[in-house]
Length: 352
View 1 (cartoon, helix red, strand yellow):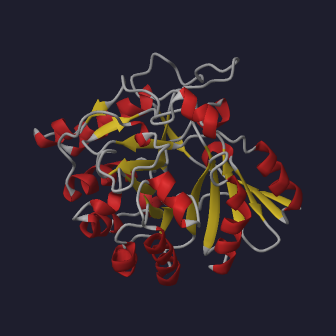
View 2: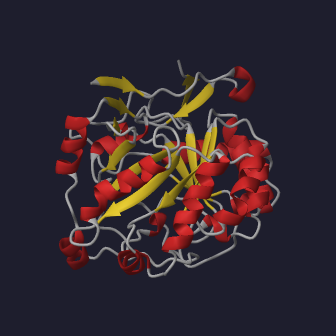
């Protein structure tokens, strides 16, 4: 079996000037995850939802123009990958406008995580406006189980949305599957075979996600439904014909004999997850969120933007947010890199 490391394309001068911000722990920030609406704005009610780490009451939401402006500033610092999330991002009435405005920027990848809502109707339009690919939640292929997990009866539509996304080229479509003990853990092979029926390879991949004890997952819920995916991953490793290591979180991807790439997403409560995290988050109400698990270090740029701040002032706020980043879970011997804790800014340097 071949083992390779997934590499991003070289940073090009015309895109971003080659400059990237590194935090105090030596981690480059090359991606951003933007919540387009609050976690409460979702038409599914998944029993395990951790709400993207955003739990406050809904406030002002960024407009499409504001999202474009802040993202354009980030591209000056080497950010070239954008993932749109929610809540459910497809519930935004202006989702096409948001995608179009971001599609005008020099991005390597513009992707969206969704439950499939409105995708049957809008997939081709979103592709045309600049969306590259989608992640779609598919926690079961059995209607009763799907309804139990998601709280809605939309399996048929979700499957149609997945097929439509593949058809128009929003690929690879990644199927997100939260594996739950006693609920859907016996569907692993069925979902892999479904991905194979869509073409597998670079058309349809599967991410099996281990339940985390966050959000709706109380301790009793977690104890009842948590399934350790270590054995599953060992099996994939054993039968894979090829193995890759992703830059993001150093996760391994396995190419199975039937041509489907699979990935096991282990809980974020580990130092590898944190130390290999190259993305910063932006909340729906215009705040940089340096850490998924912290609520005390957000940097509010939207208020400044609406009060007349120029691009340089907003860029300074981004530098501050990167400076505030630190791994929530660290190796015992880990400490801040020699970038200088006393420095007012993150290190800026070229990526090779």
